[in-house]
Image (tube, rainbow, N blue to C red; front, side, top):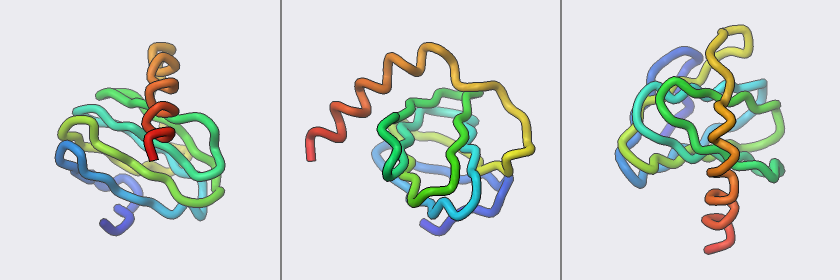
Length: 102
């Protein structure tokens, strides 16, 4: 999948993944469904549900995996959305466990 333009919607079916190249700061916003989001070199993983977002600094690639069918947007850093909910921390361990399955 190619990188969606800033602000454009992107769709993933369940168990599909997208890879973005993080040349600039990215904000990933989950609009519908549930996403597992991780970045090379970042020890934290995130599970986002509808209405949640997370910001990544430029480093390398970002992997977005659909735990269920999902719609998301890649936003410019200035666009404002709600911060990642505290409940997301619970899923960080889930992401680490998935990573350990390689």
